[in-house]
Image (cartoon, rainbow over all chains, first blue to last red):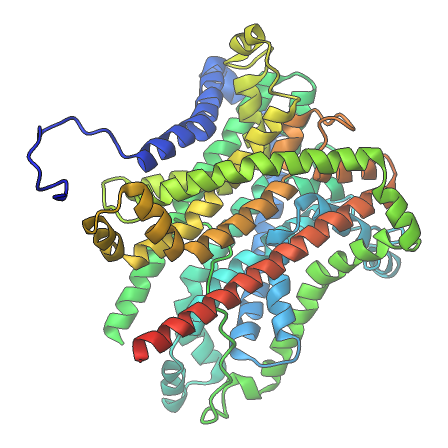
Length: 287
Length: 302
């Protein structure tokens, strides 16, 4: 039998998209666009003035400050330690390296409720393995305070910087550093002038991803937080409280604010990635 | 494409520092301090909390742990979790493979946008995912509320809501793992199969799927792990009724809140074991892929 394209037939025909396309759009429509449409519709129903009012109530503002502030803190801490861990994984050799590498993935794999339970137990100031000595020696209360929320955010955003920096660090050419030393630069100079600039897009990208993840995190935070408004109540918990109080409009508006933040953060992460690729391209072209 | 998902990659052991660079950072005090700081940090933030779950679950020995495992509420939560995964994972697998074959090898305007859209669930807070479903399907204030009421369906505070929430949170994994691999492989083999007379379905089963099997398996592991462990989105739509609409992660939180600490840690240990198995499977797939690549290398060399 001749292949289909050899046989004459009614040629210009309205072509239906292929099956994979149909499945993709149907699925995306049902599970993503429909829910997105619902929240947009409901938020639009509130009206601009009402939206602004509900989005900027004192408790909402306080929850944004707590969520975004602590998430920023957590992702910056992970920016520093993520770089250290990536460096240890790529450039050093030490016993237990494989275990360290495997542990980094645990926050991705462990259900957030388990993470929250574990952190609340370990950092409890009554009898936690770490929390009790911290409280006894320094008077620092970690679990059921804003510090605990930050610890949970640190836990869940830890892998991002490590995993974005690792491949870039691995691909760096040692010759550049050697050249820098040969030209008389000290080790700190070499690190800050030669190595760090090349890692910067990856570090920033990892921080941005960790930040975005930490802002949206609920499961682990809700278990280690005391969930007191204005103290350590995060925005996702506020949405759930509003829903439980049947304040649907309030929940919708604050949920929309979080959704807008997610879209913005996705955009920023993409921009950082494009910038990083440009940087890589020019650096290889020059080198 | 933006969010880091644990990528399927061949495990590369770190290269030992070259001998010629004895003045490098590796030799200084700082060089010894870096692994130490890394291990201390990961120990404090990840390892000790993880170990504490195991310690607490078995604090009173194995016998009480096993008794806790027999609790009917816990068993019902396990059942709910398994049902949810049994629907969500196959559905997402079909979507992921369809999306990958549709998107990966074509160039079209808006491709980057479509990939970002598929990524959205990674950046949307799970709570907002749950909220969107309430606004869509809730009988009292959902957009489709009246339709659902008249049909007599129950989606929110029932298992369909839990399943849909889980599907939304987990659907990007499969597509994200398979797309890069398909882009790398190119069209040639499929074209050859088509010229030899295979139909689309045959091409998919006999050529496309085998060529991406490790990535697909990897995506399957990630999807399943996340589906079994999802908390935020599910907690909004489940209603959290013990013995009915409670999944295992919800049960952990609920038991903890009710001061049933041992029960909470017992359930957490089960989920932790699942996470550990998923990490081990991931590692196994990476090893298999490595072997495959080596075998191919030998073939092409010969």
